[in-house]
Amino acid sequence: MRIGYDVTSLRGPKTGVGYYTQHLLIHLLEVGAENEYLLLSNWPPENGLVGLNGFQVPTRYRFPIRSIWMQLFLPLALRTCTPDICHFTNFVAPLAGNVPYVVTIHDMTLSLFPQFHSWRKHLVIRPLLPAVTRKAQAIIAVSESARRDIVRLLKVPETKVRVIHEAAAPAFRPLCAEELTPIITRYHLDPSRRYILYVGTIEPRKNLVRLIDALHQIHCQGLPVDLLVVGSRGLKADDVFRRVEEHGLERHVRFVGYVPLDDLVGLYNASHVLAFPSVYECFGLPVVEAMACGLPVVTSRTSSFLEIVDDAALMVDPMSTEEIAAAIRCVLVDPELALCLRERGIQRTANFSWARAARSTLDLYREVVNQGVREA
Image 1: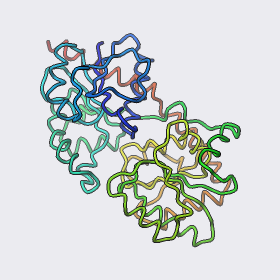
Image 2: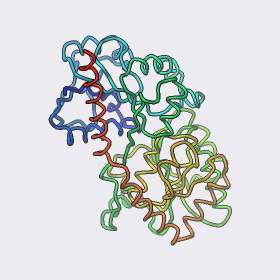
Image 3: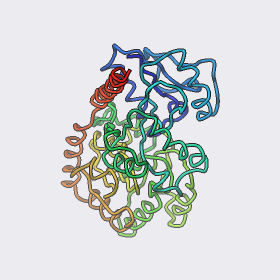
Image 4: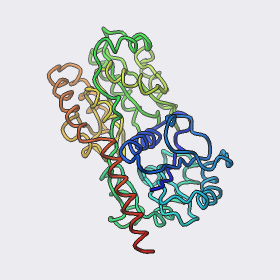
């Protein structure tokens, strides 16, 4: 097959969608090397595409606004390069043109939690979603929870939505003490202290304000522990920084910012518990990455988490500061519990594989292409 693959999310620092796009493509190239891959982007991607056997199209249309490029310029280019199928990995796809396509819709938070998104997403993505899903030959959801939301809110047939789970990249694994030394030095970690780790964008949906409140409760109970916040500043992040000041926790909360993948693996290994009390997630990639590294996890009893973690994490009501604090404290003071969660987490992540995701995605591509041949 000649496959057009949307890599627009690989420009700039990668978030969850960027990691999905990159790791899926890398494994598509491994398990489906017989195919030709056309890398679709409005601008040369900056991350993770060195040495791939695809090429970018169209190079002459370097347009700064992805949505305009996708709707006006990309359909013209696809007439020339004539892919058998396209995969749009980040919610939107061109409404013009006759190339069959698959689209990945990661979540429905624009409808479920509109207050957590920028006006630009409401203006550009939300109006397009119903038309994109009608035109798509198939939709990929990254969890059963996300699939249910897509079917319910976009009114699409259940048979049109295929669940293909994400996974932790192979780099996420337990490290030995010698491998941790550079990370401890680079991030000035104190081996005598205990660290709670959070990984993700700093935004209201991630529930960091309650996590800061939980940290304050833990300190008030006489357990000194620090919080490392790994991730870029997102929309409406001021409340998080304000809450740190209100509790006087400036010396105990470190905003590390965006970190490269290798360093992230090290930080998972150097920490004592991942706290990820998000209000809603379509999959929760940091949870799976942490479990793959053997880091005990405290996460929410909502959305996709029951499906993803099973019994390999402590689950809490994300609206309850007391539950978040109690669960984190249990992991920190109970070595047997921490070891149990470590072992269960490593076992659980064996259920998720990018190679398996790539094979399932290729099977879906073939189904769509073969269906088009039969209809022709």
